[in-house]
Amino acid sequence: MATDWAEQVGQTLEPGSWAECLDLLMSSGTENALYRGHRRFDWELQSLLERALEENLKQRDPDKALLLKSMVDDPELAKWTRDMEVALTQRFRYQATRFGIPDLPPAWDTLGWWEVMQHHRAPTRLMDWSASPVVALWFAVDHHKDGDGDMALWVYDRRTARANLGKLKARLKETNDYEQLDDRQLQNQLFKLALEDPTDLLIPVAPRQFPRSVAQQSVLTVSANITAALPGARWIRGKLATRIRLQEAWKPAIQAVCRSMGLTRLSLFRDLDSLGDSIKEIFINSRDVPDPY
Image: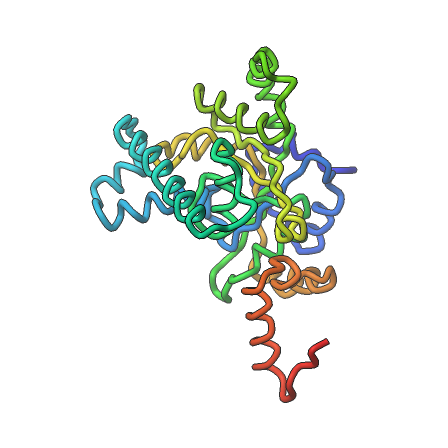
């Protein structure tokens, strides 16, 4: 019987064996499910931006950093997180435009700019998910070192967002230019409405078609709350998804499944950096010069 992830929201599942875990994943429906792998079981659902804000304050103002992780509602600190995000986005957009890089998003496409930033490792409030549980498993074991402990696989059901975005979508349809908006414009407008009445939901966003996003079967989520200043909201966010414990002892079996599916850093990232790493690894581990074909 297929697993309905929407009925297991907020739960932590602990399969007794890798076979049981694999059966759980293979029997689940994939149309609505999104998967995200963490190499540490205790990591929360947190964006690069939220982690970067915390690291910034740890170095500049340790007292503020403690306040950032407390349950105290501090409007000034919440405003600081938003101002920093705006500044980072503007700096990236200004520099990228100066570089003359082609096919950059227009200025109004905030989500598009965040996606380009995310693609190039700049901190944004976006989080990467995959429609494939095996791709997410690959990320769970990638960079995991022996002794790091158990890993985690998060599962988020898109219906959780759809069910709670009905009012916002209804408001959007009432706008005069609704029929003239394309998909990207609709996504940006929906997010702007969400910012007016912040929700802890993770809103799915269709990614631009980078080769990497296609290979990783990528789906992005964006939150109207930057939880670095709202730890309570971060707790709620975790309760909107399902977390599966991946025992460290299963890592060789997980890696074997990923290899059988042809998942490697080169196949998933499809860029010159991953190609360079792959060539170096092949050369280091080979007595002969690698065949160019």
